[in-house]
Image (tube, rainbow, N blue to C red; front, top):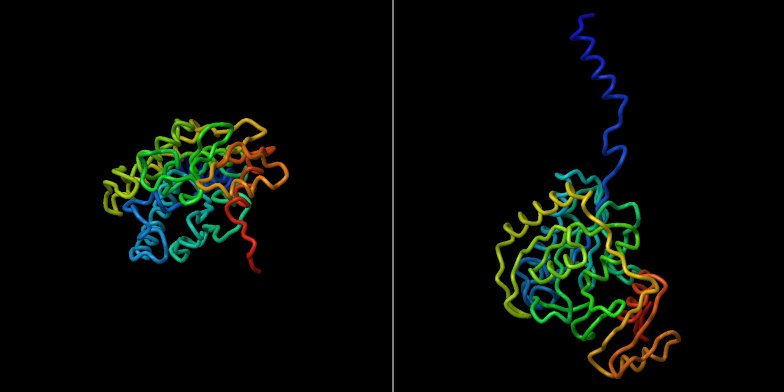
Length: 300
């Protein structure tokens, strides 16, 4: 046997005997997808099934989620869970996703927009996110419900959905590696997770107006940012909040605050604000789910 043939045989045997990096260490990515931060979204006409552009923007929402998956795969990610996290949580066109992607949809769910995450994930992505209800600049800026809350605070600090969800990811030791949305939404998250990649797909003009770009351009920006995020995971650190976790909800109306304060463990701080303290951010997430989802006429 010649030396060249022997070397070639050794390479083949070593390759067969040594599992690939992906086989040894799957790179799992959790993707939470909202809709207000999707490129082009500015009003309820794109966000609600009753809106004349909703069907089209479901397509764009799905395409931006797919762009994040495609970019992450190119960077080395191997497994994906996607949480449909807008409105009725039944927006993504699930037939557009690859067969190996798990999709979380419907409600109620204990971790809300983060349902499905656990400590096995290497990164979390936030796609189509928006700024907090206390932000006077962002497109469709709100926290959880634009009709219900004037402020949501975690441990005394005003929080966007991105901050609340980053803390849930951090509870499981998972860093937020990417956020897409308008410039204000990206800036809010990066205040908490400075190393996260930001994909700015529009710039706010007002609550219902933005300077945006065509869908193809938005998707290209997200695809590149996702790929970069995966290659930079060693720079990412989870965002965590101090426990126990204090949640303050400021309602726009009096009655919800009064009624919620009837519950044991809930304090009425002022006419519009209640306070709940959870052992962890997961407890707070469950309470938020109750506060926003419970109705006396729920069936079945």
